[in-house]
Length: 296
DNA sequence: CTCGATCCCTGGACGC
DNA sequence: TGCGTCCAGGGATCGA
Image (tube, rainbow, N blue to C red):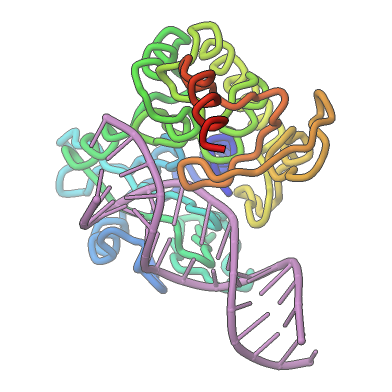
């Protein structure tokens, strides 16, 4: 499942592999995950892929302006979200096409940039000018480009659960389930804890650990849980370094307590009940306890 | 503002 | 071997 480190890996590979390539033609298969398929077919042929960037969990293929507007400096880009099972990989034309290949972009050097996505949870969109900048503004802070102070301020100003905040792309762009759980475990914070209730020191710790984990994961080319493949079609290796994610029923790496899985913000959340204690309700616990005793 | 529920989609795991 | 069933999960959307 591609999150920030996986998308960063693919974006860097593609930057090396296809930046500067001209788009000769575009062939679409199933296109229900594309914002406006006709627009892609009209706009992409003839453009040059200037560079490939990561933006949150999106890849941004920055494009040259259309020939008719070469003098106007309107930004345009192809946005690609890999969803759960997407892959964007340059291949020789002679390579057989994988099942679920939905977009094929013929490049000037003769190769094909192929988008493969069995579940089609991904998204693709051509955007330019105001609609592009407007779309990009929807998203929150990039965890690798934000200061600790800014992160702490944002998190502590919200009363949603910390897990929900980490996953909310309008708060923080790029973090998904794996890296949310991993950083919460490292910072010893329960996923259901409310953002506003966390101490400044805790959120600071969370930020440092999140950054460290993301950098490490990028170094190891991401986590491959089920389907993730980089732009060369190879898996990453960070999954071998997961401390809690996917480890329900196994001993905590710190204290040997059995790792649990609960649903927080509608997502599986793995945590250690000992290292990441349940959030305490403010004071009333004694009163509730006596009430219960009376009822019994 | 925040929540849960629901939908999208397919392949893999599991039970028989 | 081959069914059927359940489930995962990022994000959009809707109603509470």
